[in-house]
Length: 169
Image (tube, rainbow, N blue to C red; front, side, top):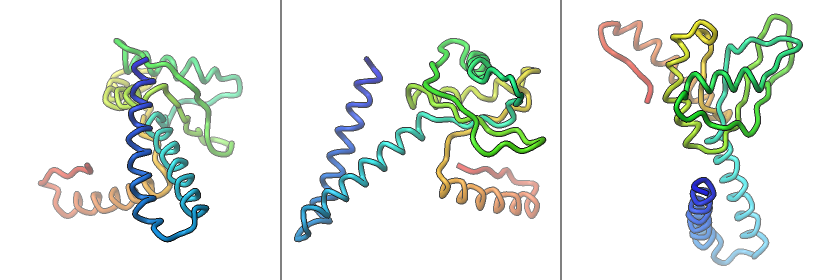
């Protein structure tokens, strides 16, 4: 029920902001144009909400007879022992290649659960089973490219100024 209320509140807020944008951007334009703008805005909001509820898991071993759901369930149990989030869906992404482990996309029931898993992901480093597993937020192509640029820049900064502490917000 809390999740439903949170989603309803988010949708109401987004619809208000979308209607404001449509009012400003569509003065004097055809109604079909405003309908297209609204549809695009709603689609964007839905995709953004899905990304906030999603995680990417890298380094989770892949095998021919793997029970992916149970692997992810074990990982979440370790990282969020007190309140393990429930999984809506999980699957591997990318094409199958010899010797390459594909990442796993995990869709949780709420964005709060995804944020909790990300906060507690450092706990996995202390385990033997998930020591080399990395959990990150699900990012769009543009976000991944921007982050890749930032990582390159910070590596250059670290090599030029090793005495200082550098990080990406």
